[in-house]
Amino acid sequence: MAWKDQLNGDPTDWLLEPDDVGVRYLAMRDLLDLPFDDPELSTKRQEAHVYGPIATILGNMQPEGYWPKAGAGYLPKYRSSVWSITLLAQLGAQASDDERISRACSYIVDHAMAAGGQFSIDTAPSGTIDCLQGNLCWALLEMNYENDRLKTAFEWMARTVTGEGMAPKSEKRAERRYYAGKCGPLFACGANNNQPCAWGAVKVMLAFGRLPEEQRTPMDNRAIQAGVDFLLNPDPVKAEWPSGYAPKPSSNWWKFGFPVFYVTDLLQVVEAMVNLGYAHDPRLGNALELVRSKQDSQGRWMLEYDYTDKTWVDFGKKKQANKWVTLRALRVLKKAG
Image (cartoon, rainbow, N blue to C red; front, side, top):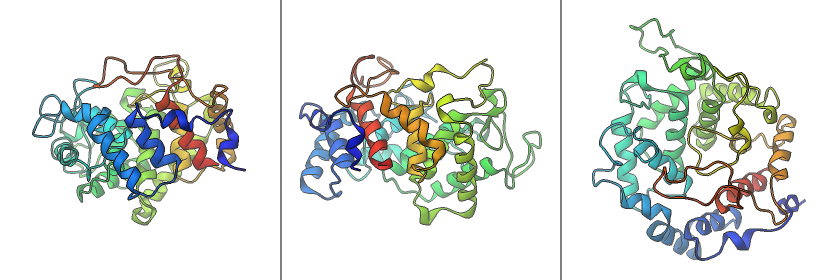
């Protein structure tokens, strides 16, 4: 069965409309199977970097490589360095296509990563948290940025999932220990009442899915298996993961959006699992069906969660068919199909 047989209609021409240079480039790259060096794709990629949302974000970058103030770049939300880099990666920005992107990536590694590999909200190891660690590890690889320090970041991430060689947060003299935020194995998070956080788990699994298999260590693979089992048990469509201080799961799980920062939706859960090779795991079946069920009669998906007026660029109106959300869904269904 062709993957488009899952669709109520074919929105490809809609995504390729010339007035949306950013989404057009990604649709060509991800849906048309064009090689990276295809002349037409190369032209559209350059246009996206010069005229699209990528250009707007880079135009607001300070010459040193940060937004809008120096430092670890977590605040202010959602325009500072952490969020700008995460958004650039979702837009398909490539370090090889604009020197400013490479400069920004180097800046965040130099100013937000502690010596132990922890990406931090304030440069100290204690400022680490799974959603931040996963988002930045994924984003830097997604933009094809190379830095040997990322190996340390992935090691920290894997070790804290499995608990291997980690001391409790109370042992403050230990070489490797948990902290108040990243407080224990299997995505335990202080912000989630010390329970495993599925939002953080999805980000970590996305990052491991972007790490080439030949570069994964045995500990990486153990962390991946733990994360997959956590996210697929129970049925993801119920989102019955620990909800911390809330009596029931966040309704945001069922609201597909763009961009995606630490608030996560079920579409991103499916994306993470499909990228790790679990498209045909029966535990993912209901979640895939949920993705398919949210399309309209033309094979388009609606924007249900957004950051309008909070980021450097707006990406459409809520409750309307949205090219960016549609592209997210099509990528998943194509890979799963």
